[in-house]
Image 1 (cartoon, rainbow, N blue to C red):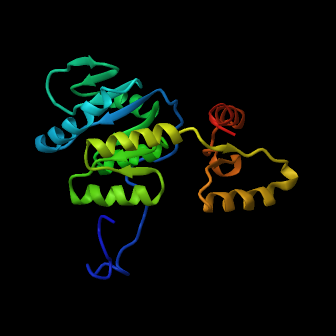
Image 2 (image 1 turned 135 degrees about the vertical axis):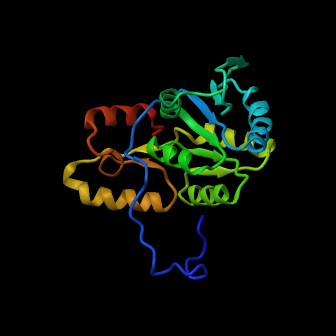
Length: 219
């Protein structure tokens, strides 16, 4: 995606994937707001601001927007949107962890953050590497790529409508192998399901994860 065809650039057979350069261990959060971290050069930020803010300020859903503007810290509100010139690393993590979904440009660092916190995304890419990242996230079925306000509005509606629509799979341990095969078949067919053996993060408490999945499922 970002590198291109390994044969054409002469890297096939001479490259090895060794893992992520950031911690991507899954961290669970809540689903309280839409988070839009804006970053990049001045021109890129200006384009994102003109696309994102007019759309989000019309929503009833709480939105947190970080403008990525260095200097004096300023916070204001427009409708249900909280606008911050910038957020501290801790504030950014909190906003990311407790978001419903994330709207961003497709930058590398934020991609890893959305994976870490298991957040679906809407990408508005403006650079080649961002286009590559957006394509990869789309193929993973966890992101929508948009180019303008109209497409952003439609993507947000789609996210809001589909966010909690998944089925909770309850089963007997005697049928564990059959249920695992069934779940994999359902997912291959495009049906979203929650199954403890495949969806619980390592080291988590089973009771807590099951309660949260039951609260948020549709079936």
